[in-house]
Image (cartoon, rainbow, N blue to C red; front, side, top):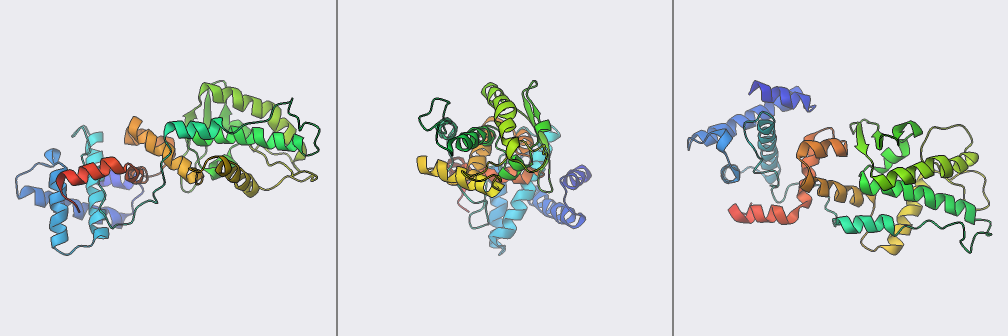
Length: 309
């Protein structure tokens, strides 16, 4: 149990929170002792029975959900310690408690379509001689490169803005995403087509964009001035313009938080929880677990199988 306390402290929990969690876990262990059930053998059925017991004692959904999350974290710790092979309640969520906002999850084909449908005009475009076309083409090339990182690596828009040219390791096929107050740093693999595209952006498009910047900068993605202007627009205009462009062509697209949520949800079906936590840059595994609520079909099946909460 002392090792689990250390695990909680490593997750950034305060001393008071660790003490509360420890007390909640002991209460669950006492509940299991009534039927002589070892914690290593506890299943979703026992957990649900315990939660119903708490409900009968008058505990609200929010409080019971905290206790459920403590048990989830303990099971995850047990997996790390090779004391169990699975977390039988990882998809379980109590109805009526606060959850992450649900988005319509875009499947992999829809995500790829967002990227593939975003076209960059070529040099033979009939609008070539228009005074606004050069800047327009630069912005489209930049946006295409940005979109590939959002769709494939699931990074956030603030992380895109913080990327520098030093974060790209094209020969290694990787990109480094710096950490922040809310996220951890990570190094993510690039797909082969991204390497070519990002190389073209960095050495061609970005070189052109540098001409419009008022001072030297290492930022990877640079703003573009509107037609007839010399000064580049701010980053807010980048996201506003790109969002409106995609929405006009894809009615299922809501925003880039939806894209990130979709990417992380698909990762959870492919990788273990720790791997997804790293890829997403989450400081706490509980942040990663919150995306499991998007797997509605799996969640509903688990709940209906045992007992509706």
